[in-house]
Image (spheres, rainbow, N blue to C red):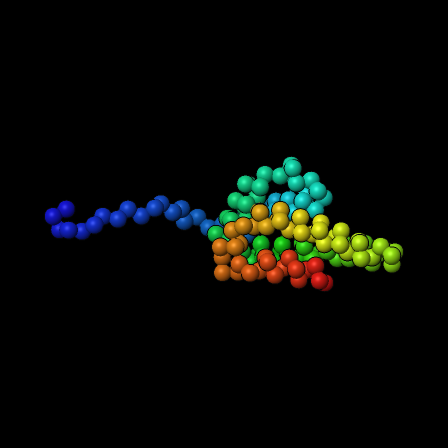
Length: 137
């Protein structure tokens, strides 16, 4: 060490990339979890595992699958909610919209908890804008 060089130990990084099949498998787990949240059955979910899956998708460059998939899943669900609201009697329409909006907010908080890592990526505003824009189909 007489040369005055500073020794830097770099952290170990495994260089195994996630293939598309692994990404699709993680996505299927996340879609099924979102469906459970919508069915008000979130108590059976492991949010830590779901967060890890979402984190790994973004980490291994499959964030687009996650972003577009969540957006489409939420839109599909809200289309069915919209059909239910449309079928409401006129005198209950406003209260039905209010109930559905509150349920949407609760659901999105749980989905946000799974996708917290997205707030630390360049597309941080994506989820926040999607929550409102999807509801305004």
